[in-house]
Length: 109
Image (tube, rainbow, N blue to C red; front, side, top):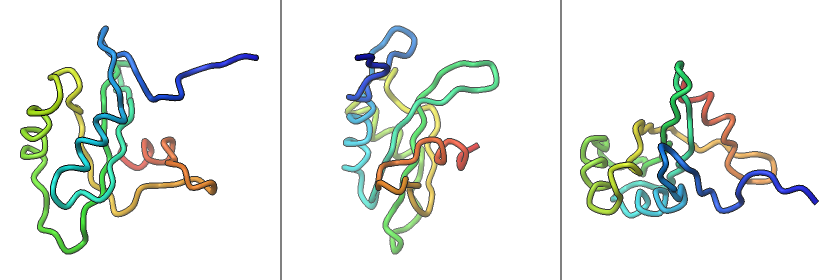
């Protein structure tokens, strides 16, 4: 048997181990956020960073990204704060109902 990758969504960035599920769970505590997905992305210079995509309640006022970051600072260490936070109408899913990370990454580029 050959196992590649991690099933628990733990990643390592700049020497720090980060649980992406933990970031998602904390984001879901923020008022009016319906769904949150955290993932790893890379910039043009191949630097790795955490990015999130979220959906909000349709009838809610627009959510301020700076307020979300201040909220996250109270629960997460600085190295686990997402560098990019995006809002979308819907989280892309595969036919099996799982999050389609490839599609989400393309959507936020």
